[in-house]
Structures are given as C-alpha cells and as structure tokens.
Length: 341
Ligand code: GLU
Image (cartoon, rainbow, N blue to C red; front, side, top):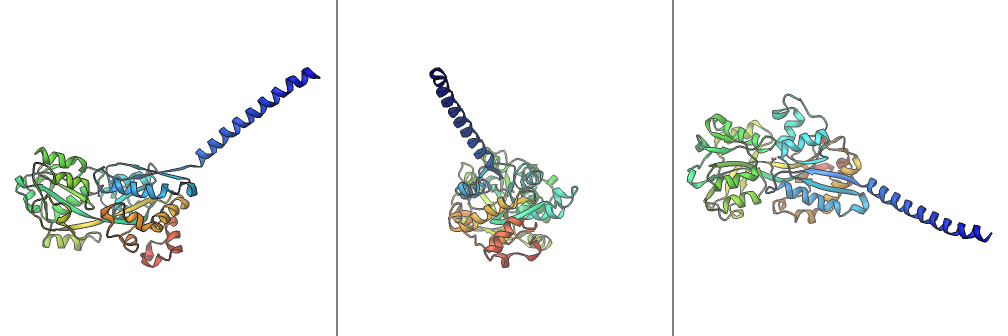
C-alpha cells in the first residue's frame, strides 16, 4: 500500500502539471487565433497616405481589447496599387484618390479592360489632395506648357498621380512624347531634382508633406507651378472628380515664388472590399468617427476635415459595416443615397 501511494502521489502531481501546461498553451493559441490582422495599403513614406495609414491604425489598435483587431500599414506604389490589392484580397484596406475610386467602380482608365470593379467599397473620405507640379528654378518652367522637352516625372505605374499628370498634359495640348517623361515613385523625385537629373515632377498629395518639404529644402531652388487657365476649366468640366484647389505658400517657406499656388485636386479616400467582414469595417469606422478630434490632430493635412466632408467625394457603394455606423450616428443624411447598401 505504501509503495503504491508513493508512486501515485508523484504521478498525480505530474498529471496536474501536464494538464496545466497544455491548457496554458491552448489559451495562448486561442488568443492568437482570435486576433484579426488587417493591413492598410498607403503610398510612399514621404507622402500623406503613409502617415494616414499610421493614424487609422493607431486609433483602431488602441481598442485591441474590444475588437481584437491589429492593424498594420504597408508602404505601396499608391492608389491604383491599393485598389487592386484590396480587390485581390492581398490587403484589407487602402487609401486611394477619389478619382481612382470612381474609375475603378466604373471600369475606366487602368480598369477599362477589366471592367467595373464591383467588389470595391468605400468607407470614408479623408484629406484633400492637390495635383502639385514642382520644378527647379533653373529649368525655367513657370507653366505647364513649359514642360515641353523637359525631364518630367509623371508618376509610377500604380500611383494615383500618373493619371492626373496625363490628364493635365492632355488638357494643355501636350503628349507624353513631347517631354522626356519619367515614371518613378514620388519618393525618389525630390532627390532627382536636387541631383539635377529631373526638371520637374507631378505629385498628387495632401499638404503639407515631407516630400515637397524635401524638394524645397535643398541646394537647387524649386517652385510650385500653377496649373490654371481655360484649359483647366475645360478639364474640370469634363471630369466630375476634379475641382480647383490651392497650395498655401506658407506651408513651404523655402519654395521660390512665395505665393499661394492655384491648381486642381481630388480627395484621399479609404476603401475596402465587400469581402471584408461587416464587424471589422464597422469597428474601424466607428473608432475614427468617435475619436474624430484626436484623429484630426494626427496630421496637419486633416485640419479641414469635418464629419460631413468625410462622407463626400465617394463613388463606390458604402461598405455595409460603415453604413451601419453612419446610420447609428445619424450621419446618413450627408451621404449620397445611391451609395447606401
Ligand atoms: N495620391 C498619391 C497616390 O495615390 C499618394 C499620395 C500620398 O502618398 O500621400 O498615388
């Protein structure tokens, strides 16, 4: 009997230990499997999309205990890349220009061959973006027509700005063949201007941003070139997503000229796919709108944001998760009714 109890006691202890260890492991495993990862596609690290992805993630990740959502940010080639990655399921969310959202849902431009991208869903609008033309003073470029024969970066394939610079050239009677066109990422352009390997570049971006600060702070002096005139008025007439915009001079004190620059613009928007669950989109929408003042402080380009203007400029149907929140919060009145699910 004694011998038996001598064997039984350690056996029981070991069994307890075993059960304890495995249940801990299981707990850890289920905590990890409960975690929902979402990735937000943005743009180059010196633009506004990248910090925008950061701002959204920051607000959402604060509520990890409630939603178990872990949002992360990816630097990408820009709007067109983000829309395609959201549609393929490689990314769950993306920042994209309002004009690119319109073109994707209507099967235009980059989506002409593939047709309307029916799974694309809008969540909200964010900051305004201006089609910004930067030129070295040495190049002598003072208007868009002066781009003829110059080395000009129009934007990388996958970016939002490539389509805008092509539209701008066309509106002013120029073709890509009239210039030495480059197609590199916006993040590289300020360095190329400073190395005198580029005369000018287009960037569709919110202001202020690190990219234009970098371009205006070097040895080579640069100016922001206005895009104005009857040619622009005709362009705005032709496309519903373009509007006039201004780049305030005070944001870039080192730029030559010192005057506010008139140009045209679009809006940054936040998009997803119908395949992303209602709960996730609801949670993200709710946290951004319920922490609106905190969100607005996260980037100077958000200064002009209101809850109302964050619901304008959308063209893809609203994701049901976003629509659910807007209904609860009494914001539906600001939304184009044809976009409601
Ligand atoms: N509008 C640019 C694009 O869609 C990106 C601007 C930014 O990164 O802030 O490619």
